[in-house]
Image (tube, rainbow, N blue to C red; front, side):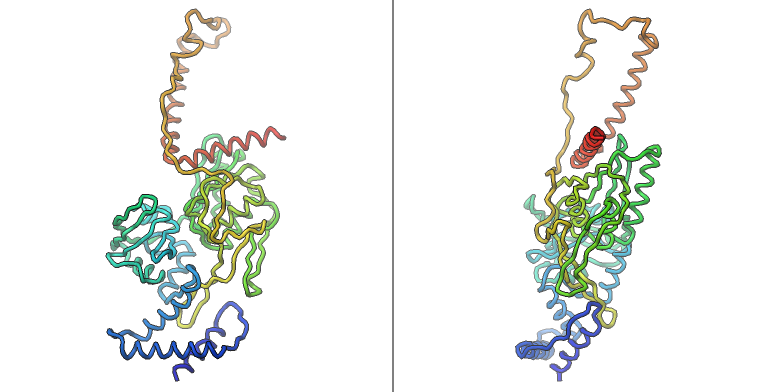
Length: 443
């Protein structure tokens, strides 16, 4: 009786899946395993030390099938499926972290900007080993994520192990309703644009266009000198949005391809004519928190020699997950393909290697003796500019020069203070300027 129900379930799943599958006949060995599964289910129901519901046992079995395949395939109950749809639309509840499972612990791929986890100091690469005092070891990724979810405004305490510091510590985070702003931007000195993409949700393509239009206005309606595209700690998102972001800066050619066992998973995405920057230099910053869709963008621009990639090696998630609805409002996420950069590279477990390695560093200013006490003007008997060639009196010129220097120093101090905290950004801006000068000199 039970074995017949399992057979019927398999046929039903095949019929409802959005991904076409070939009809298959189960082997004799498969029937034997299904018989074992049915027997295990019966024994749990009759002899397990605590009373458990059919739903609990069967959902655990379903999830076990999926999580045993790879870290990104998983089962989603009704609530989890709803949360996933909200997340890709740009608004959801929780802590604000993208996670995976590694070595029996929840590993943070990346905290999302301006979310509770980010403000609490959670970093890419952190391991969450306890949730409210309960060990993560033994939990599935879905179970761990469910425990981290909760009512907005409630606190959760996670024990974090930070590998590079070799220490574990508790972090208390207040859950919140998270509204993701996928694109942030500002104008840097010298007409260099800065765009940060925090996640690839459904709003990215329009947001990039709006950002570039506004940056041009901020630059006195003059074209930008170049662009810094910041993909650090971007955990990925929608493949279509990664393609759109790459297409914004490419005139032609392949952006990414996907290859799987099923015919409709073998796809190729190409750029359309129209580079929004008209060939101006681009520097992309990546780090170990740059995953999936952000690696697609970095890989496409790198292979087409459209951008220089700097920073540190990216995460290395080169697989494509297909979300499939299941009966009763549930769903599943299944890895169905790998993606490849235009040159044919698969970055699965390899990551994107930057063209220039730039590790995070602290920048400090130190005295060099470069002040007014040294130079031609400090030498005894130096020649003065004749009065008849001066625009203004010597005193007035000194006053004007002093005011200009004070204003410039204040501006420089503010910029230096901001960049002291972000050495990689400082290098990226300098590289954009250098590339712009070099490009103009070749015309």
